Image (tube, rainbow, N blue to C red; front, side, top):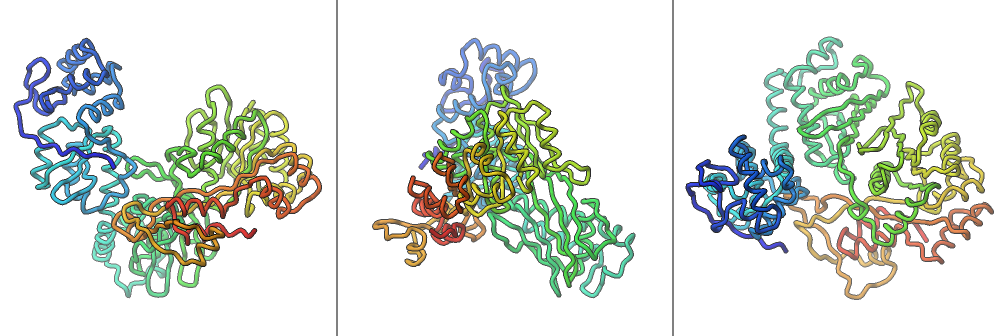
Length: 598
């Protein structure tokens, strides 16, 4: 556990390093007798000469000392935060916790005050409030926060940009539910939409006008905003006989979010159609569209699909965070051995790496994590996707556009004329694309792609099933993988438990003496679900000469699996069992996503 240091301070007459009075600035504030500049010198971040230069700039510009040091390139923000944490013996703020903070804790500090002081309430222990700040030496801010919260403060320090982003995330999550209900009630009153009022009889123009009324616009925006705050990947708007249910898919599972009145349904659907540039008047056939929305600091590409049902049009929206952070292989759930196998395949100058798994199993995320470890300056990397899910510097990313004739096969032909070193093809789904990808891998290119198959051995034979000659497959493909996602146990409510012995036996295959399994009991951070976030399980099959010979001879996936098992192949079931034994997920969750039989 990290050691928190409770900071007790009193108001002082702050003075800068030269003795000038300037209340509230970093350089003006002291901690246990040491000023900000002295702390940085003691930490070895700057020299006395650097401090003198920065103070001169500070007097001329009126900015904070830290800002002056960064502007003069005498220190970085990370250097300053590291120095403060070390010298003051306080914890560094982890921005990843922003979406998991108890809403009651977040709202302990009013949002306007949090933004003004760049401070976020992270946790509460009795009368002690743990607060993350970008400037822990700001005595005025600390005193204001202590008075406003009536708590003693335990300070963490973090980058100002991290804390600002965390404030946005935390307050949006803390207020989303109440805001949504308030808007629904407000729309009912403002628009006069009662349960007896039918929108289905209105004309197209009237529907457009109703859908563009401020309350409906705000309601749709809040549905989208709440979904983003809860890390949802999909939104479902489902009309039932007497009501409408809005559900979010969070960590792979659908949850009810809200139930707007039935009479709001048509206006909500029309509003989404307008955003997606769909035909508002067409309600008899399925429609597809997309739009891009910006919520706070996030760009989100939203793919929309409508489906006529007996109670009206159902809407499904897939949320793709275009500015999503590229995670590392370790963060995805790769164990060290699996990382070594994957990296070995990525270091090859040519060949093919294939990943299989159902929709939403994180295949593209894994490919991008791999590309994040490649030399993007010395090599030409191009991707062909439908759609582009992540934005990555120094990678040429291309969107498939079937309406314009830009398919995977036509796009791949064009990419091959662009002198690529590495090509990522979003999906190999037909013989033409498969043949082009295979020939690219055989002519000096590293090709990364995905296919639909149940497991790694089936992935190895999938291209043969599509129609590619076995000798081409064995010559080009070096590694095939299968992956699934399992939900992580919420660390805030994690506890040991005794799972069903039959489930343990089915997962592990044998009794494990002394094994302890865990589950989440449900808390405010995970909204009572017991899970928070997901990790991946993998099975990785390197194409050895022995396996190549089996593929050439037309062996089945089962035969390949048996041969691989003899060589130490780790299956999805075995990897899932390890995640359960390590306390990362539950036995039932691991069993539910690894269904292969041996």
